Amino acid sequence: MAVYERRYEPYQGPRRPVGGRAWVISRFAWDDFARSRLFLASLVAGAFVPTLGLLVVYLHHNAQALDVLNLPISELIRIDGSFFYLLLWPQHWLALWMALVVGPGLITRDLTGVALPLYFSRPLSRRSYLFGKAAALMALLSAVTWLPVLLVWLFQASLGGRSWAGDSLDILTSIMVSSLAWILLLTSLSLAISAWVRWTPVARLFILGLVSVPSAFAMAVYGITDRPWGLVFAPMLLVRDLRFSLMEDSLSQIGTAMRGGFPSLSAPWTLAALGLWTALGFLALMSRVKALDVVR
Amino acid sequence: MLSASSTAVIPSPPARLPDPSAIVLDGLSVRLGGRPILHGLTATLRGRAIGLLGPNGAGKSTLIQTLLGFHRPASGTACLLGEDIRHAGPDLRDRIGYMPENEAFIPGMSAVRFVRYMGELSGLPRAVAIERAHATLYYVGLGEARYREVQTFSLGMKQTAKLAQALVHSPQLIFLDEPTNGLDPRARGRMLDLIGEIRDSGSAQVVLSSHLLRDVEQCCDEVLILREGRIAAVCDLAAERRDDRSFLDLDAVGAVDAFAAALGRRGIDIDRQGNRLKLVVPDRFGVRDLYALAAETGAHIQRLSYRHDSLEDIFLRAMDADLDPAGNASDGKVQ
Image 1 (cartoon, rainbow over the protein chains, first blue to last red):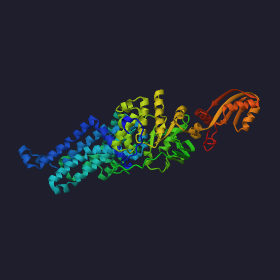
Image 2 (image 1 turned 90 degrees about the vertical axis):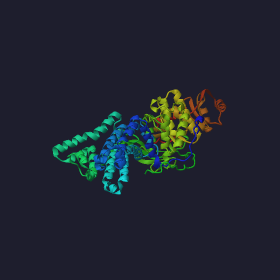
Image 3 (image 1 turned 90 degrees about the horizontal axis):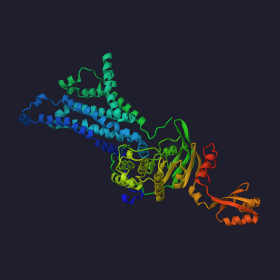
Image 4 (image 1 turned 120 degrees about the horizontal axis):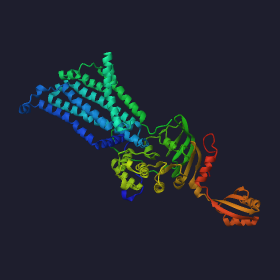
């Protein structure tokens, strides 16, 4: 119907398949992210470390450039687990920052505006709604965590040859598994908190507190019991452990020194604990996201 | 399950006229928070504009929300556009529009983006959703304000934006829950005109829930009156309006008994209270005939007035009527 006609006319054309509607939610969420200058600045900042990593790898394999620059990079920096750990570590912090910037607004806005009945009166289930929101955040966090670091790994593999790639599969596993676990955890917690805490600054504090404060508790448990089980309550330390433990064989002295003497859980226990945190987050989220609240 | 081919489009079924039975309730009961809210509702509604009428707390919104799938029926079922709500696929919801009673918008989103978003969620391809969002906002009278954020709108504009999102995807059945709530007379008139236009376009059936009799009387041709979660009356207003009977109220003196008997012999229904007679006369029986009959029988008509059963009469009768144990008015109909 033409705008100027100002009359109601039915639409008889094709419609999108119901299965793809969740992506509409993701797309609109991305559009909303892109309106934030803080978000765009953070995204640009997120490219800094991986770009530096690419440069180091390039110089590492370019003797001519090293001669010209007169830099002993290949002696100073080894392209091993510690190198990738150093790349991944700031990216994971950045992911936390990004989750704090964009996460709290994702569901809060729909709850504040009481818009959920509008979503659920359409062919959209609670799961598709949450999938759409989570996919938007996960895509964003992927763009600042495993994707750029994977790019550096692939670049190094292309220059270092098959033998390096074959020997460094544990690094790849660590990049992927620890990043995905971190992304899932941040997504579930930030969406859950955004669903329960409607005031964005408070929601941000909650996310930050939930991720970081339990680390102190874990240390206290370790101090008292001399056992690492307190880590179960400290998701941030769990992800840190996962990063280390999955690339343990490829760590140089620097990496081992960064890890410190603090004991850790085995990788399966760490994954199980992170899975539990993530599941709890999604459960809290599901209990909040419904078309209507029934007052008992 | 989510499909990867989100950008593909599927052809719509050919444009259909709205189903003659927009809503069929079959013993529908709903409990919320352990309390029974709707009690075994049974009715068939097929009007172009159906009014859900009842005092606050009668269960109007709960009925709409149950039909939309927000609440699970405790027993019984209902059909919308011929599809059982318990087994209906998601495509049924593409054919339904919903304007909730309370404020519903997305903070920080302009009206046009909001309506476009809702259009895309209802399956409109992106370009179509953009075009229809603009056109729908112009249609409802928000064209000039379409780039403003919805939360900055006045209450009337917010109501209108809610109507726009309910219309943008061209549903066949539109639920409007208290659409004139909080509107000033001018905005209310505009809203009712819009509802009338949609009804008259013939492309969608409208279900209007309201506690305002005048709104329902102005827009609807069929009314379901709810009271305490039960059906108090189902009334075909269009048939009432088409009815070829006249209701007369008269005061007579003289031989009133003979006059009443003569009327009875001519098949005219009478309700007599002393000298006051209430008559239901067929159209073929004019006022002149009535005066002639009165003169013939020795009665003298002192006062005579025409009256029609207004929705208010029907509503008040329904509120006073006893409800049967199954939860419906004793005959289910008010004539």
